Image (cartoon, rainbow, N blue to C red):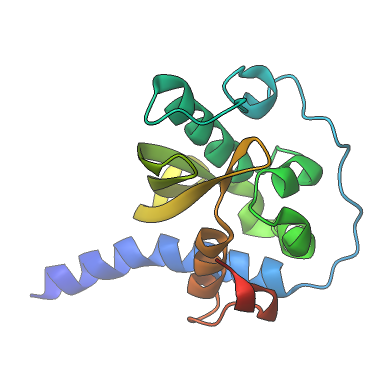
Length: 179
């Protein structure tokens, strides 16, 4: 029994570290300006032709690739804040929270998409892991991608769920109307 308790603490510690980092970032009142509006050439969202699509098409490979590319780009700290705002449903509403995520431990966080299931022409379920410095910290997360303004985006409800997880179940007030 003692081993299980120790193993559980070892597994929960990285997740708690991420949650703490996101909570601190989300609650900070930093006033740094957002980065340039163009993504760097090495950004998956900038270099992939599937990052946006003219129309969603079922569960096509291009649609799944666009969702995966955009989801991972949103959670990649090297993606400029302005691009991250574009990759989040109702992103401009969450610009301050996205900007706040760019510092501290959250700056080493990323996401790895495990699977995408397109559920309608405008929605998909995304199974993903949150990584810290390349190591899995929050495995087996489930979120929703939405097709908005010609782009597959991270659903704001998924973003708010992570913010709530990071803040002991309480999301910032901006999340009160998240879809």
